[in-house]
Length: 122
Image 1 (tube, one colour):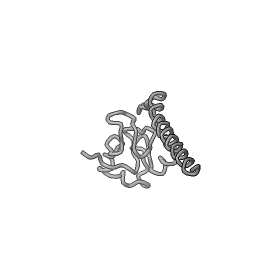
Image 2 (cartoon, one colour):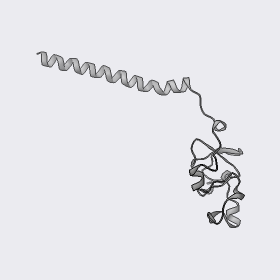
Image 3 (cartoon, one colour):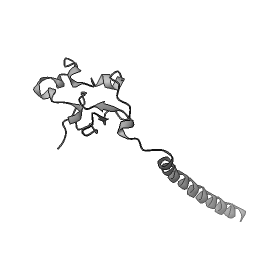
């Protein structure tokens, strides 16, 4: 009988451990909301043009500075209309600088450009 009673005790301990663990995990996001603060777009740093991901995509704060020999997508009348502010990935609305889905955690210039430009849906 000692074998079955030890199994019952172990099962009870396991349930208690799981309940405590689930409670602790659920408390983490609440603690983050209470103790931390929400990051706003203006709190994000501006993307540095020298950042490796920016260089790879030809990002420039001013679309007129894009190397069109390297990025022919930006050439011609249609290419000249391409700006971060009218890209589907730009999340800054009408702001001069705003977040971009391609460069998470950083802001890009509304009048800027990169090779990931996609026309705004709408």
